[in-house]
Length: 202
Image 1 (cartoon, rainbow, N blue to C red):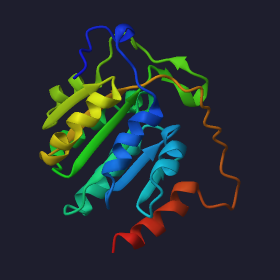
Image 2 (image 1 turned 90 degrees about the horizontal axis):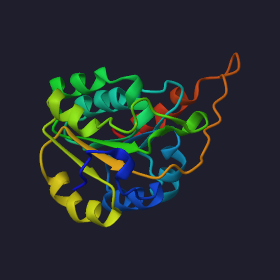
Image 3 (image 1 turned 180 degrees about the horizontal axis):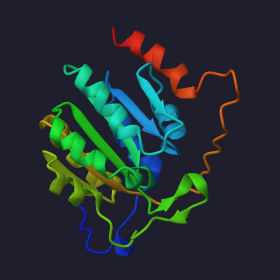
Image 4 (image 1 turned 180 degrees about the vertical axis):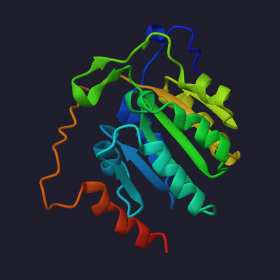
């Protein structure tokens, strides 16, 4: 497990290798992804129960919480970004307070706002989302900078009751999410994506 004393000295895996580890465990979980991780995840794990959080940065974790509370017999994963979560840190307390045992919160921590041009995250040398989640009351937290270590530990983490937050230190990939305003008269992307996922959950 990664020591997060100084983020600048932490080993970092690629986003692709991190998501490969998750994809190998994917069964029938609902997976809510956000921003730059979405495209890679769709390639790694195409599924009717993928729900892309597009149009409200920082909302993925609470969107996933709503799904987890409404589907208590089904595991729900959220693939969150560090920049996204930084915008909505209060969600950690909301999730911990609700206490969904079926909730896995993956935070892709690459230290930058990759979607808007890789600007450094505030306090990116020190910020530790696993410690924040632990303080908020998550049932368990962990951090990894190496894909093999993450792979070796994941089954045990998945077997325990959540909510669980796993912080994955990754290298910035130079991806740019080109968001555009929804033209008048066009249904927003998230609203188009939700009905097929809701149908698959029946």
